[in-house]
Amino acid sequence: MTKKVLLATEKPFAKVAVEGIANIFNKAGYELIKLEKYTEKTDLLKAVENADAMIIRSDKADADVIAAAKALKIIVRAGAGYDNIDLNAATAKGICAQNTPGQNSNAVAELAIGFMLFAARNKFTQGNGSELKGKKLGIHAYGNVGRLVANIARGFGMEIYAFDPFVEKAKMEAEGVKVFDKMEDLYSQCDYVSLHIPANDKTKKSINYDLMSKMKKGAALINTARKEVICEESLKKIMAEREDFKYITDIAPECHAELMEKYGARYHATSKKMGAETSEANINAGLAAANQIVNFFEKGDRKFQVNK
Ligand code: 3PG
Image (tube, rainbow, N blue to C red; front, side, top):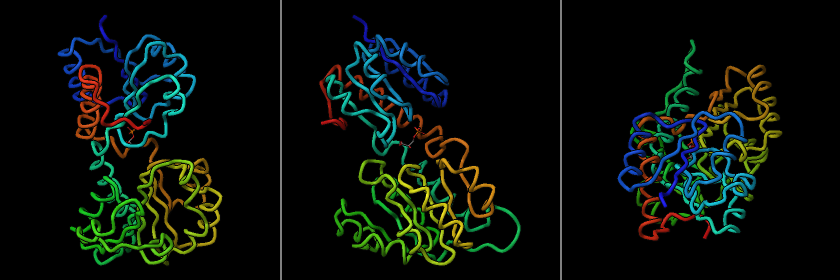
């Protein structure tokens, strides 16, 4: 039977990426079904019903979606963070969940740097800003994105610091990064802190008042990771207490309207997550996802499985 692959992207990939995905499945003899820009969950529940495989972005593959999927064997999150997949539900049904690590990282890293410039230059409004050169950048989690941020920031003449207990210290140091053993030091000593941690039970709300209040005068917190890692009550408190504190984020918090109204000069959130919104990132992640699906069915390849 012809394999059916559902491309469920509420935020669609660039046309060129979709064409590339279609080519891969065409060659493999699979049928591609597209559900793009959908607004209702019921549309996804219906579309997934007979799919053997599914590609998603930040689309929620929750327990309902997985329950509705009668034939699903693999879900690939075309991107890095897979907090949008109910892994327990997938595992219980024997569905292989995968991501495409590193494929869209450069786009996110460039946005993080853009956010730093945006913060340094008063959101591109008039008046004296400051330069990135000579400033201390603290990278919170030195994964694919963090590492690229470090590389680009070096070109701006920033001093690069990182905290990541999961990466070997020697590896980071070999790449010219000064490593903090304590997370608090990253926050207290850097002018910019750029978040690159995933959202999970350990990290949700972990960027709290204690950490934020340690940040230097005039410091900026840059979030191209996930809104869930921020403790919003703490964020509101620090924004109210400190006129010098800046928060620039790719993922609007629940309290976006309030922050925008009260502190619009030093707060910004994109209207829709745009870190990975480049044609290059869409092509890299989209094609990788398609190839992973073909390799899974044809060769049993589970290299990028995240629910092991
Ligand atoms: C990721 O985890 O890969 C990024 O957050 C990008 O998400 P998106 O595919 O929804 O833009």
